[in-house]
Image (cartoon, rainbow, N blue to C red; front, side):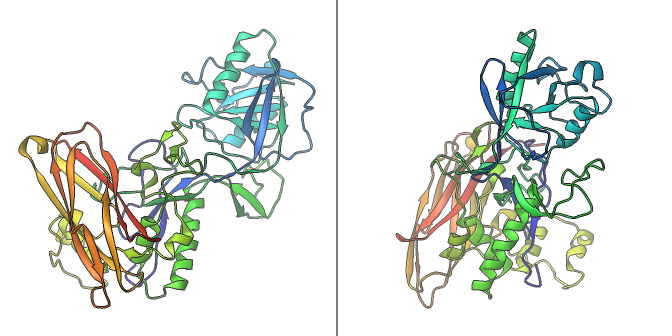
Length: 466
């Protein structure tokens, strides 16, 4: 970063558990994962005639006949009481009961495709891979080794209920190729790691989300697409999922921005990506969380989903230099020996330019209020400086979303830029009025009345004393 290199890092695949983030330093761009409007649909047709949609990349030669029903079996009771055999772990399936049948397997512990190998080794002819509560309705397509379809939690529960309620349950599987125009999308991936960033609550993480589910990626010829040693297939490309897929998207867009604005710093590029990110899907509703099918929050999606074209012309940017980051560490209370790790190549020292760590010129704003703030009418003032990178002469006015727990005031409420005035500092004052039991989310948006909407997510957290 000190040498002008933009650094993007994966948020991690520990979701949907909260506080599962990695790579939370403010000088790196932390990227979560989302879906896109492409899917690989497959269907499960039950003996009742009911058809349930899932996903699969299976393209093997041993397809099941769509006009024939096959015996169906599940070695469990329900998804809230998982067992080794219900998850189709190695060595848990009885060949006598599985042979010639489609097996329902719960996700968990072992890799998804490996469960299919276990079913295949036991003589099963197909697999229905059912999500559990931690995966929700998210569908990840895999290169299965036998006919297999992944289904969401609700559909998985329906299939398991059918299997338990009927003496001779049957099903068949069909694979439908590629489908575009999926709605809603994007959706925050269930596996995408979540905030808050407990190392520094004043720094909202992740920074943003980008496509990271069912991504077409180059693949080594040394392994089969499932990565299992028993997979003898070889291919130059594969479909992969993870924040390790979303992170390169951001790196590529950062390179695009740098090519148009070669003088921009890494912080300016990150600011452009964050302040132009969108928080509504292609149905015009707030971004959803795949693990719960409910609206996601900035702890899930950060500033929102990247919008590359908009990021090329953000209007305003929040710039940060290497010394600013060092002063942030000073404000965090690091010891001299800890600070030395960050200054051994630059010989930096604390200049105490930040009143609090929340004053780092970050594109996202996180206000941390004490638990008793509402009774003492606590004030918290944070500062931000924006640099005009749009038309030389331009004016912006502010729009602030309402909060239940605090009054939020921005001064000045109007920013006027000229040839001489390219940077303006504003302050945000949070006045506590009613303690909330959970963090509140909102935004501050600077608008120029034209194409620019410079949006900063705002989080208000009520901190309980230790």
